[in-house]
Image (cartoon, rainbow, N blue to C red; front, side):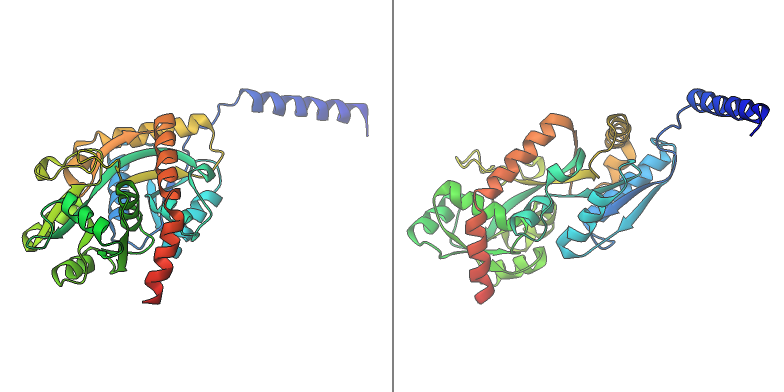
Length: 324
C-alpha cells in the first residue's frame, strides 16, 4: 500500500471520528413507544392504557406515536415477562397492577418490582368489603366477631389468587380470625354468591360497588387509605382499628436498565397526562394520582411484605378451595 493511500485512509478515519464526535445525540424517544398491556382488550387496565396513549399523543407529551400491544395469558405473566425482556432503550414499557405481586405470591410468575424499571403509579382503584343489606352483619365488627366465635365459618366470595383474595386474608390476620374463601369469580359472580346466601362477605372495587349498591349490597369497610367521598358513610378498616390499606394501582413498568435520563422523559409524560382535563374527565373507577421514585418503591415493598405475611395461609386456602 502506497504512503499516499495510507495517509488518505488515516485522514478519512480521523474525519469520520470527528464527525461522529460532534454529531448531535438523537433525542429520546425517536421511534414509537409501545405500551404492553398483559390482558385482552376491553378490561380496565386496557382502557386506562389506551386513554393515556391518546392523551400523550393528542397533547404531544412525547414527540412520537404511542402503540398499545395486548399480551394476555398466564394471569399477566406473559405480558409482564415481555416487558421485562424488552430492549432497555425505553421505547417499550407496560401498564399493570398489583397482580404483579399476587402472581409472585402464587408462584404464577417469579417476577416482582425489582425485576423492572418501575416508572410510576398513575392511579388508585380502592376496594371495599361488603355484605348483604338484610344479612346478619350490621358492620365490620359484627362480621369479625362472628368469625372469631366461629373459626372458618365466615365465607368470603372471592377469586382465588387475586388482590381481593389476599386483602381479606390480611384483614383476617390483623383481626386474629380465620375467614374461609369460596371460589366465586369476578364481581358479578361475587354479587350472586352474596345475594344467594352462598357467602357472607366479598371484596368489590368501589366503582363496581356503586353499580351494585342498590341491589341488596351493603359496604362494611373501605380497604384503602381514605374514605370515598361518594360513600362517605362507609368507614375505612383503619378507622375501625385494623391496619389494612389495600387498593389496586395502575403501575407503569419498563425493562431493567433504562437510562435515568430516559426514565425521566417517560415520567414527565406520564405525570403531565395525569394532569390532563380530558383524561380526568374520561377515566373511570380510578382515582388519578401520580407517584414515582423512592416513595413508590417503598410502598411496593410494604405491600409485598404484607402479602408475604399471609402467603402460607393463602396457599393452604387455595389448596382447600380446590378440593371442594
